[in-house]
Length: 67
Image (cartoon, rainbow, N blue to C red; front, side):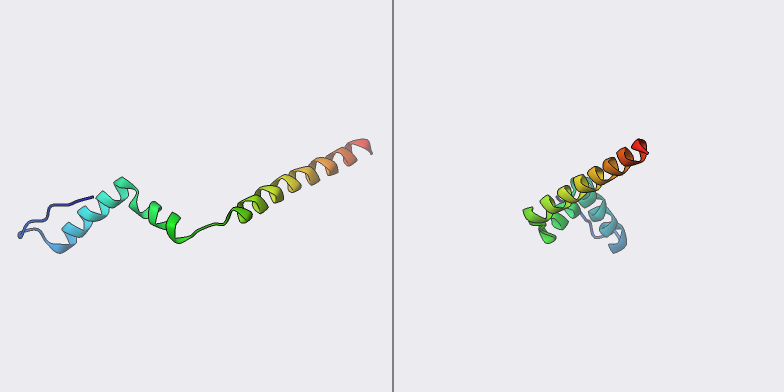
């Protein structure tokens, strides 16, 4: 990532160019991935919770259908 800035360019314009380059290359997303590390157990817990919710809804629907 690089931005060429000359003497005549205002600082706010140079920062805008730098921000545009950073968003184009996805630097912000990479930094957030590094900063907020999510352990594997948390991912497993979330997926199991989602499946348990689906199973619960299916069981409730089958009970309602039997009545």
